[in-house]
Amino acid sequence: MFVAKKGDTIKVHYTGTLSDGTVFDTSTDKDPLSFIIGKQEVIEGFDDAVVGMVRGETKTVIIPAEKAYGPTKKSLIETLDRSSLPDNIHYKVGSQIEVTNKDGSLFYVMVAAATEEEITLDANHPLAGKELTFEIHVEEITPKKVVENNPLDEILGRPDVLQ
Image (cartoon, rainbow, N blue to C red; front, side, top):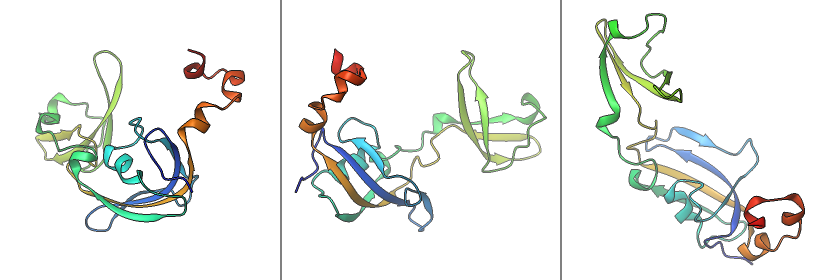
């Protein structure tokens, strides 16, 4: 039986909840989440939580904001005069708005507050500043050496293998 460690590929089903029990994400109606442990493909606390788990194991972990999406950064919250914003957008508290940077890239901000005169926009990740609880069930673990020695990688042209 393989014990999950850094560099292994792991497939898990999970349910993420907030401290009040609200489910913010789950994989139960989807394929399991697959990632390489330690490659920063998931939040740090989730990565840490699966190390040492075995196939078939289920556990519940509480991840502090610092190991999830970080603290809420006040520098990413801005209050603007409504007159300086497009008037064809409905600014409903809790809704997300697509914003275009000067370089043309897109990002989303949440409407945190709205009055007749001002709109407060928050560019933090929606889960920033929140402690997250995950129930994690391991479906499969593929040890690092098996993934690295897959003869199909060279045939299929995986760039990380051909270097």
